[in-house]
Length: 287
Ligand code: C5P
Picture: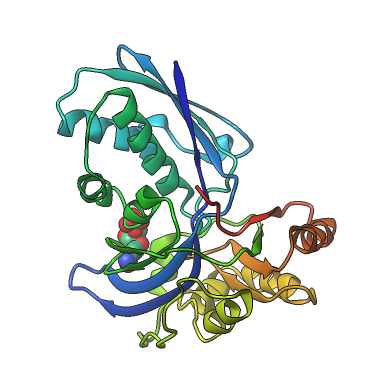
């Protein structure tokens, strides 16, 4: 039997960098949502671990052994001393190195799927500690629901519910190196007190997001000017309630009251930028 799971994009609705540790990692605060769609990860029982990939962005991925999915599978296998294997397949639909945590979300999905396949009863907190060794976004992707992230990404506070809004993701087709985006930070600011994000109306939610920022956005635009173009394209649409970059870029997002408005904005942007990745969906999937 094949088990399949969507590895949803992870969008940082805001991202405040509040400090820097001696090991170079940054302390942050971020509100994260998981729109519908994403990569599709599947696992089938096998004698050893194997990995295949298809999909529009499979060609942008490196060697199988370097893939975070394989690293996560090997780590789980070694940590829990299982002799089981699995055939892992990844349908790579999300752009690579694009600020929406595709690799982390893929790795989180494979950890969940393999725990199920191998009948490993691993508490979520233990899985997060394991995942964290592969990347700072793994814990929030393992939670797979709207959440506030803090620390360097390992402290997760789930948010009860987000308002029913729609999101348009726009990627201008340029990969951004996360360390390079962090290295462009010139000052570390505080985090505005936006209050709780639980159970807000659409209007209150947008108003709170507006007093927040993505602290990596300015430096990322200096590295990749196309990010500025993507934000301008989103902001030029009257229905767009808020436009911002996610993570370290280059993917930017716009928020809308209806799917029709998000799709219409996406169609308009795509008509001017044929090589950009554009995807409209529900801002947060209800599981
Ligand atoms: O943990 P991950 O591999 O995703 O991080 C990639 C890079 O992003 C790190 O090497 C570091 O340069 C930067 N980073 C950071 N602070 C974080 C997360 C990532 O400085 N909290």
